[in-house]
Image 1: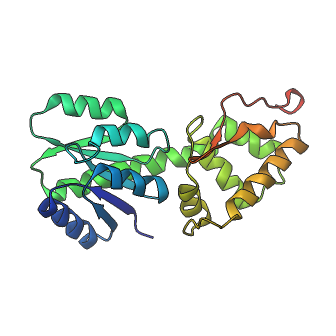
Image 2: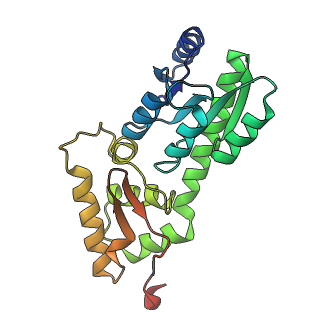
Length: 225
């Protein structure tokens, strides 16, 4: 399945050019023209990467990125004005993964995207080998493959809420429905299985309006560590 990319760019011509080129490069593309809409889309849907312009109406790119980082760690490539070093520094400090100065070559844009996605997926794959995930996997052998994938996703974003939409699409491979309780059922089962082996089930915290989060206060049973 090709990667899903959100393009948040207020210049309609640039937005269309980027969208068409990414579609031709076999990416799935969603576009919008302002920060408020971009934040709503990024909060409610799963994207593999976000292309984010800094100068946006309603909510600028940096403020959108700050709010986004309270919800998820979706890889983000910011688009900045040529020569504006402060924008680049602030963007990276806020949580952007890379930047590209305007005007830019579309082929370079695709190469930057490929590099970010490659790094992200390599880092995500390492979570399976992390000490925390391995211990949980060992301590709770009753976890199903889907439940393990949910724990893996939460473990890759410890103390940062992961949205339901992200979990639905990245783990359950389906669109998030407002009245769909499938994910809630899986989380409930994980908590029950944690409790059975003396792991506090509340380490998976429900964050109202944002999703679920694995707390960094997780205490593993001493006799099984």
